[in-house]
Image (spheres, rainbow, N blue to C red):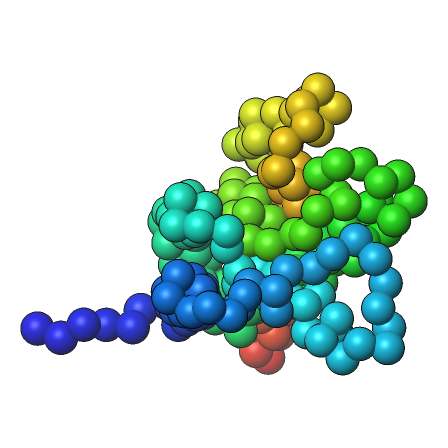
Length: 209
């Protein structure tokens, strides 16, 4: 019996993030500086563009990493089997970019404590996957009850926490990640419905001929 690399995108994401934290733990160099995005614009700095995406790979400590990847390793492989490795990778990249940009915009405009600090970690990706997973088995044309409940329980809590609590957790990343997951889910569901309908139409035409 051999090990199966059954979920390439999720496993690679997990391995890279873990290796980075191992290096950080034993290195005198502040490795996570390259995997943290701050709330200001640095158009002249090439590393800034890298950080817009790389911040989802960095983590503050082992509890932070384990908290995120417990969810990612549970939900991610299901999504990867449903949508494919390339689509899941695309969704992770887009979510990282949008989260990074909005972190900078909100932080530079309003200067709230939880946005002024550096943003690092995959929690936005976790919330993207949670919302996306709530739509996986839904039929086109309706809004799944699971989606409504997940929005109320997960995103509702984050909205309330962002208003009532000042901490080192970016509720903005959670909310943005969740919104992105919902958008991806409904878009992919619609696209898949059209694809299935197109196949059925072609099959009907062949049958009628």
